[in-house]
Length: 179
Image (cartoon, rainbow, N blue to C red; front, side):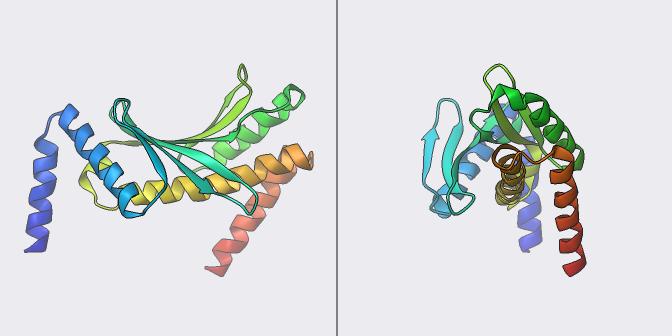
């Protein structure tokens, strides 16, 4: 009986127009943040949330979640600014990371000197599948941690992008072997 009710809810959600679908996912997103007791700022007019999450012992980042252009959009600035002398290495590292990522994109704004990680999902996925908002937020958060580590090595240790990526691939393969 539960499967039938779940199926009927999915059909109902699909039958809604785009505006109502966006509103429904927006309400689901707000509910998720409230249920998880995240410290979030809610901006109704623009349909986005801001939440601060700790990604290391010494660092927290501001994460943005929004419903925009029929997408569920997760984004975070990995680097709020960077030295222009590192621009080439930052582009190289971002390109390598983008080649490795299963989802999301590392974006660089060279004019304003920041690096951002963006994960966009078609709105139908969180609309139809309970738990997808949490899955996307979790995936975005865990990937952010790894991307941040890579960029911190580049900036703080001035490690070459190729070495950073090689170490990341080695760590990933070791984790796969352990699982």
